[in-house]
Length: 143
View 1 (tube, helix red, strand yellow):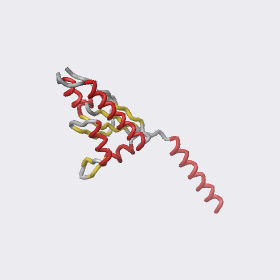
View 2 (tube, helix red, strand yellow; view 1 turned 90 degrees about the vertical axis):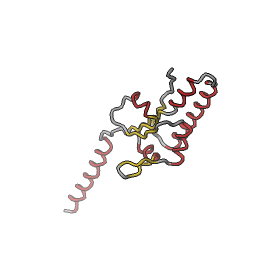
View 3 (spheres, one colour; view 1 turned 120 degrees about the vertical axis):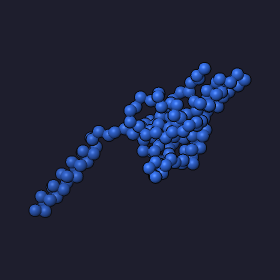
View 4 (tube, one colour; view 1 turned 180 degrees about the vertical axis):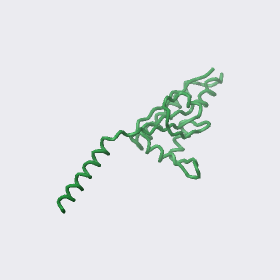
C-alpha cells in the first residue's frame, strides 16, 4: 500500500511540473506614458499607467520614487507593475517635444540630444531592474 501511494505521489508531482512547464503563458503588457500615445498601440489587452504629460527625466524620477496610483481603493506601485510585465511600452515626452518643435527660437537639435540622453538613461535603468522586453515609442512633431 505504501508503494502505491509513493508511486501515485511521484506521478502527481511529475505531471504537475510537466503541465506547469509546457502550459501556454499569457504575456503581460504594460504601457507607461502619456494618454496621447494610446492610439499607436496595437495590443488589445494591456495594463496602463497613464500620465497627462511626462518627460523621460520625470519618468526616471517616478521609477526611483516608486510612484503609485489608486485603483479600487488599492495602491498599485509602478515598480511592481514593471517587474510583473513581460513587455513594457513607453510613450513619453511627446507633448513637451511638440512644444519645443513648434517654437521658433528654440535649439531643436540641442533639446533632441538631451531628450535622447534621458531616453538612454531610462532604458539602462529599466534593463538593470527587469529582464522584460522594452519598447520606447519615438517622438514626433505635429505642425
